Amino acid sequence: MAQKTLNLRGLKCPLPALRAKKALRNMAAGDLLTIECTDPLTVIDIPNLLRETGDRLEGKSEAGGVLSFQIRKA
Image (cartoon, rainbow, N blue to C red; front, top):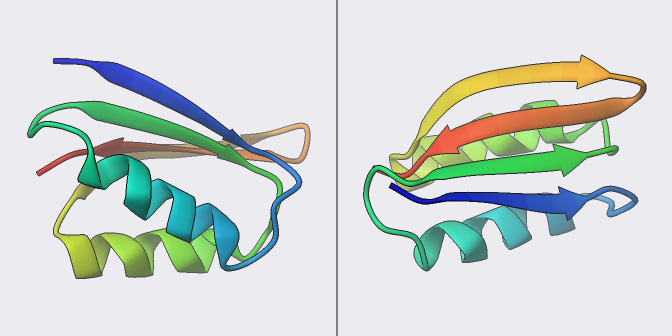
């Protein structure tokens, strides 16, 4: 299983969700994608994206204004 990290800091809605969706399209089932965002709307956008794609949110955290989401490709 591969791991990939996307630095999406500074991007505003809807760009973080769109870039995450594009990255997930190119990943194999079981791979882990970590995205790092600064847009507070991603706490709404990312779960909505995952309901659409069927992928799983494995964790989320916030430190120093950076939101991190760990997403497992379905």
